[in-house]
Image (cartoon, rainbow, N blue to C red; front, side, top):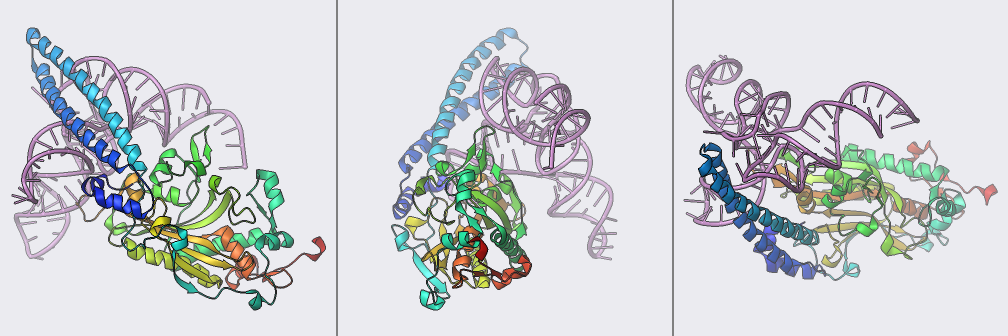
Amino acid sequence: MIDLRYIREHPDEVKEALRKLHTEAPIDDILQLDSDWREILGELESLRHQRRVASKEIGQMDDQDQRQPLIDEMRGVGVRIADLEERLRDVEHRLQQALYQVPNLPHESVPIGADESENVVIRQEGDPKTAEDFGFEPLPHWELGPRLGILDFERGAKLSGSRFFVMFGLGSRLQRALIQWMLDFHIEKHGYNEVYPPFVVREECMWGAGQLPKFIDNIYHDVEDDLWLIGTGEIPITNLHRDEILEASELPKKYVAHTPCFRREKFSAGRDVRGIKRVHQFDKVEMYKFTTPESSYEELESLLDDAEDICRALEIPHRVSQMVTGDLGFIAAKKYDIEMWAPGSGEWLEVSSCSNCEAFQARRAEIRYRPKPGAKPEHVHTLNGSGLALPRTMIAILENYQQADGSVIVPEVLRSRMGGVEIIKLDVIDV
RNA sequence: GGAGAGGUGCCGGAGUGGACGAACGGGGCGGUCUCGAAAACCGUUGUGGUCCUUGCGGGCCACCGUGGGUUCGAAUCCCACCCUCUCCGCCA
């Protein structure tokens, strides 16, 4: 969430920012609740002070006749305090709920735009492969995969319903090679620390990472034990340092994790239903940084570059686009997407999204650092970026590396992790 | 799942309902001493909110796992929950 004090002191700037985001939030309610809150608190505190002083006196009195009137008086004060406390709790709760609805505000460098159609492509590396380059009409992965026997949608549906899939043989082995290779890449070349977190978390983790209340309909939730399935590794990693005060010398803290991601995709019913582009369960290698406010934008650029390095090493054309204000989402102050070209599907696929969330998550999860020894703690900035999402990277590999006979060449960097397999061949007998 | 023990500050660890924001020890920081260091000695050492102040700073309030309750007054008593540990059961 954003800083209440900032809203109090700059309400017009906040409202202006919300207009740029093409969204709404109950700013006027917040201002009213905030001023109510402070008024009640002032009154409450002076009563509590009064009671404290009197109680101390009562404790020191021996004379019962003097004591009793004071006790009676304080009983009345106690009733008023209890009443004010209840009002304060109520206002506080409503204020908190209202604050939770306010999205992060965009960084000044974010271009203004209404929606994703206005996102700005800021660079492209490699040229999208055309049918001409291939010498044949490239197939989409949902045809290539089943034909190779490495992707099975019917059985996915049989086990778990639509938008679930099964991988077999060299398909799952390719994904496993990718995961290990990407993890090692970020660990060895980019200095990230690997972490293996739980994949189900408590409700407060969802609030801390900014998933609740906004995305409640997209989250799998086990009611029995009140545990929530993560939709991204970002959620547990954010909460790793919840309620902690880090030392400035530890920053930036860089983590990388391989986790499954579970998403209900309730709002994309009917969209992207073919293939593995949008599924309920997928794997992702996620990079994450805890940084100082001063360095977070620099760290965003390097995070983006770290993710792009994967595309480069896989030798698949990619482009980077910057999200405009209207497509920033709820949590990010600035965001880049990395898209790989998928010649069979004929579209750019979002394989990574790199965001600077500034203090939005840190404030919710109370993640702070001490700028100098002995100094007051401040909220850290948090950044996250996929490095990369597995199914879409698999799509890009299958579609870019396909050959006329339907076989798929294994990218060179992955071969040693696939027992030297260089090509995923069509099993002619099975067709 | 059953039985029991326990959660106090950076750490360890006390704490009869009133003098406890919290003994004591350790650590950290500052100082004395020293050429420098160690030792010793002295001092200091949490987080947040709110109000006052240009600032320095100051007043007040809250916080002893979390949330309620009892009471004039709660770290201390009661209830619920969370977490940790030990033993038993179950189990990859």
